[in-house]
Image (cartoon, rainbow, N blue to C red):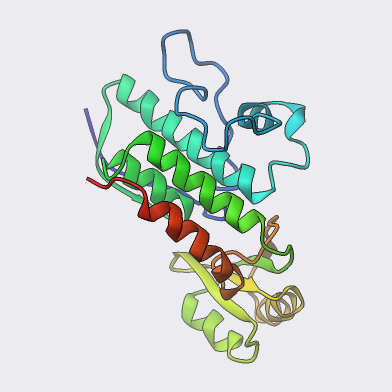
Length: 218
Protein backbone atom coordinates (compact mmCIF):
# COMPACT_ATOMS: atom_id res chain seq x y z
CA UNK A 1 0.00 0.00 0.00
CA UNK A 2 1.06 3.59 -0.53
CA UNK A 3 0.84 6.38 2.00
CA UNK A 4 0.48 9.68 0.19
CA UNK A 5 2.90 11.56 2.41
CA UNK A 6 4.76 11.20 5.69
CA UNK A 7 5.82 14.15 7.85
CA UNK A 8 8.49 13.69 10.49
CA UNK A 9 8.72 16.31 13.25
CA UNK A 10 11.65 17.92 14.99
CA UNK A 11 12.31 18.41 18.67
CA UNK A 12 9.83 21.27 18.97
CA UNK A 13 7.45 20.34 16.16
CA UNK A 14 3.77 19.66 16.70
CA UNK A 15 4.46 16.06 17.70
CA UNK A 16 8.13 16.26 18.64
CA UNK A 17 7.53 16.64 22.37
CA UNK A 18 4.96 13.88 22.70
CA UNK A 19 6.49 10.84 20.98
CA UNK A 20 5.65 7.62 22.82
CA UNK A 21 7.75 4.75 21.43
CA UNK A 22 6.18 1.32 21.20
CA UNK A 23 7.97 -1.24 23.36
CA UNK A 24 6.06 -4.14 21.86
CA UNK A 25 8.05 -4.99 18.71
CA UNK A 26 8.27 -8.73 18.29
CA UNK A 27 11.47 -10.63 17.45
CA UNK A 28 12.22 -10.28 13.77
CA UNK A 29 10.17 -7.10 13.44
CA UNK A 30 11.63 -3.61 13.16
CA UNK A 31 12.06 -1.90 16.52
CA UNK A 32 13.87 0.89 18.28
CA UNK A 33 17.13 -1.05 18.36
CA UNK A 34 17.13 -1.49 14.60
CA UNK A 35 17.77 1.99 13.18
CA UNK A 36 21.34 2.35 14.42
CA UNK A 37 22.90 4.48 17.09
CA UNK A 38 22.80 8.19 16.28
CA UNK A 39 25.23 8.89 19.13
CA UNK A 40 28.96 8.13 19.38
CA UNK A 41 29.87 4.52 20.29
CA UNK A 42 30.17 4.13 24.05
CA UNK A 43 27.78 6.97 24.88
CA UNK A 44 26.33 6.43 28.34
CA UNK A 45 23.59 5.99 29.17
CA UNK A 46 22.55 4.28 25.95
CA UNK A 47 20.02 6.06 23.80
CA UNK A 48 17.50 3.21 24.11
CA UNK A 49 17.67 3.42 27.90
CA UNK A 50 17.17 7.17 27.86
CA UNK A 51 14.03 6.80 25.74
CA UNK A 52 12.45 3.76 27.39
CA UNK A 53 13.60 3.65 31.03
CA UNK A 54 13.97 5.80 34.14
CA UNK A 55 17.62 6.30 33.17
CA UNK A 56 16.37 8.98 30.82
CA UNK A 57 15.02 11.21 33.58
CA UNK A 58 16.64 14.61 33.16
CA UNK A 59 18.46 13.54 29.99
CA UNK A 60 15.69 13.23 27.44
CA UNK A 61 15.36 17.03 27.28
CA UNK A 62 19.08 17.43 26.53
CA UNK A 63 19.24 18.09 22.83
CA UNK A 64 21.94 15.52 22.02
CA UNK A 65 19.64 12.77 23.34
CA UNK A 66 16.37 14.40 22.23
CA UNK A 67 17.46 14.73 18.60
CA UNK A 68 18.99 11.26 18.46
CA UNK A 69 15.93 9.79 20.15
CA UNK A 70 13.50 11.43 17.74
CA UNK A 71 15.53 10.22 14.78
CA UNK A 72 15.66 6.65 16.12
CA UNK A 73 11.91 6.55 16.81
CA UNK A 74 11.04 8.10 13.45
CA UNK A 75 13.21 5.63 11.53
CA UNK A 76 11.81 2.73 13.56
CA UNK A 77 8.23 3.84 12.79
CA UNK A 78 9.06 4.09 9.08
CA UNK A 79 10.65 0.64 9.18
CA UNK A 80 7.56 -0.81 10.86
CA UNK A 81 5.29 0.78 8.24
CA UNK A 82 7.51 -0.68 5.51
CA UNK A 83 7.31 -4.12 7.16
CA UNK A 84 3.54 -3.82 6.86
CA UNK A 85 3.91 -2.95 3.19
CA UNK A 86 3.13 0.74 3.67
CA UNK A 87 5.49 3.17 1.97
CA UNK A 88 5.01 6.92 1.55
CA UNK A 89 5.10 8.52 -1.88
CA UNK A 90 6.42 11.76 -0.39
CA UNK A 91 8.39 12.55 2.76
CA UNK A 92 8.97 15.88 4.45
CA UNK A 93 10.50 16.87 7.74
CA UNK A 94 11.17 19.75 10.08
CA UNK A 95 14.40 20.35 12.00
CA UNK A 96 16.07 16.99 12.78
CA UNK A 97 13.08 15.44 11.00
CA UNK A 98 14.57 16.80 7.77
CA UNK A 99 17.47 14.38 8.22
CA UNK A 100 15.03 11.53 8.82
CA UNK A 101 13.09 12.49 5.70
CA UNK A 102 16.27 12.72 3.62
CA UNK A 103 17.34 9.25 4.78
CA UNK A 104 13.91 7.78 4.02
CA UNK A 105 14.07 9.37 0.56
CA UNK A 106 17.43 7.68 -0.11
CA UNK A 107 19.54 10.84 0.01
CA UNK A 108 22.17 9.15 2.19
CA UNK A 109 22.78 5.91 4.09
CA UNK A 110 21.56 5.12 7.59
CA UNK A 111 25.15 5.25 8.85
CA UNK A 112 25.66 8.72 7.40
CA UNK A 113 22.29 9.87 8.70
CA UNK A 114 23.28 8.73 12.20
CA UNK A 115 26.59 10.58 11.91
CA UNK A 116 24.81 13.76 10.85
CA UNK A 117 22.22 13.52 13.64
CA UNK A 118 24.94 12.90 16.23
CA UNK A 119 27.02 15.83 14.99
CA UNK A 120 24.00 18.13 14.98
CA UNK A 121 22.87 17.22 18.47
CA UNK A 122 26.32 17.24 20.04
CA UNK A 123 27.31 20.54 18.40
CA UNK A 124 24.16 22.19 19.74
CA UNK A 125 24.56 20.55 23.15
CA UNK A 126 28.07 22.01 23.40
CA UNK A 127 26.76 25.57 23.04
CA UNK A 128 26.27 27.64 26.20
CA UNK A 129 22.91 26.76 27.70
CA UNK A 130 20.23 29.40 27.76
CA UNK A 131 17.55 30.99 25.71
CA UNK A 132 13.96 29.91 25.44
CA UNK A 133 11.27 28.84 23.01
CA UNK A 134 7.52 29.33 23.24
CA UNK A 135 4.66 28.00 21.13
CA UNK A 136 2.08 30.65 20.26
CA UNK A 137 -1.40 29.91 18.94
CA UNK A 138 -1.43 32.85 16.54
CA UNK A 139 -0.66 33.50 12.86
CA UNK A 140 2.92 34.25 11.88
CA UNK A 141 2.10 37.79 10.76
CA UNK A 142 0.54 38.64 14.11
CA UNK A 143 3.53 37.20 15.98
CA UNK A 144 6.06 38.93 13.74
CA UNK A 145 4.41 42.29 14.35
CA UNK A 146 4.89 41.88 18.09
CA UNK A 147 8.47 40.64 17.72
CA UNK A 148 9.45 43.92 16.04
CA UNK A 149 9.73 45.29 19.55
CA UNK A 150 11.91 42.40 20.75
CA UNK A 151 15.09 42.21 18.63
CA UNK A 152 16.40 39.22 20.58
CA UNK A 153 13.47 37.01 19.52
CA UNK A 154 12.83 35.30 16.17
CA UNK A 155 10.17 33.14 14.57
CA UNK A 156 11.63 29.65 14.86
CA UNK A 157 8.91 27.63 13.15
CA UNK A 158 5.47 27.93 11.60
CA UNK A 159 3.60 24.70 12.29
CA UNK A 160 0.25 25.82 10.95
CA UNK A 161 -1.91 28.82 10.05
CA UNK A 162 -2.19 29.71 13.75
CA UNK A 163 0.72 27.81 15.24
CA UNK A 164 3.98 29.73 15.53
CA UNK A 165 7.07 29.06 17.63
CA UNK A 166 9.34 31.87 18.83
CA UNK A 167 12.93 31.52 20.03
CA UNK A 168 15.69 33.67 21.48
CA UNK A 169 16.81 35.43 24.65
CA UNK A 170 14.82 33.98 27.55
CA UNK A 171 13.75 37.28 29.09
CA UNK A 172 12.68 38.73 25.75
CA UNK A 173 10.83 35.55 24.73
CA UNK A 174 8.92 35.67 28.00
CA UNK A 175 8.10 39.37 27.53
CA UNK A 176 6.95 38.88 23.93
CA UNK A 177 4.86 35.86 24.94
CA UNK A 178 3.19 37.94 27.66
CA UNK A 179 2.18 40.57 25.09
CA UNK A 180 0.78 37.89 22.78
CA UNK A 181 -1.08 36.25 25.66
CA UNK A 182 -2.59 39.62 26.61
CA UNK A 183 -3.90 39.86 23.06
CA UNK A 184 -5.71 36.55 23.48
CA UNK A 185 -3.20 34.05 22.06
CA UNK A 186 -2.51 30.83 23.91
CA UNK A 187 1.20 30.53 24.71
CA UNK A 188 3.19 27.56 26.01
CA UNK A 189 6.84 27.56 27.02
CA UNK A 190 8.71 24.60 25.54
CA UNK A 191 11.10 22.38 27.49
CA UNK A 192 14.34 23.07 25.65
CA UNK A 193 17.97 23.59 26.64
CA UNK A 194 18.75 26.19 23.97
CA UNK A 195 17.07 28.76 21.72
CA UNK A 196 16.89 26.49 18.69
CA UNK A 197 16.20 27.84 15.21
CA UNK A 198 17.59 31.22 16.18
CA UNK A 199 20.91 33.00 15.69
CA UNK A 200 21.96 31.62 19.08
CA UNK A 201 22.79 28.24 17.53
CA UNK A 202 24.74 29.59 14.53
CA UNK A 203 28.10 28.73 16.20
CA UNK A 204 27.20 25.04 15.74
CA UNK A 205 27.10 25.35 11.95
CA UNK A 206 30.82 24.85 11.30
CA UNK A 207 30.97 21.50 13.14
CA UNK A 208 27.84 20.31 11.36
CA UNK A 209 29.13 21.46 7.96
CA UNK A 210 32.35 19.52 8.51
CA UNK A 211 30.48 16.27 9.04
CA UNK A 212 28.02 16.99 6.23
CA UNK A 213 30.92 17.51 3.81
CA UNK A 214 32.15 13.97 4.44
CA UNK A 215 28.83 12.27 3.71
CA UNK A 216 28.06 10.46 0.47
CA UNK A 217 24.92 11.81 -1.18
CA UNK A 218 22.79 9.99 -3.74
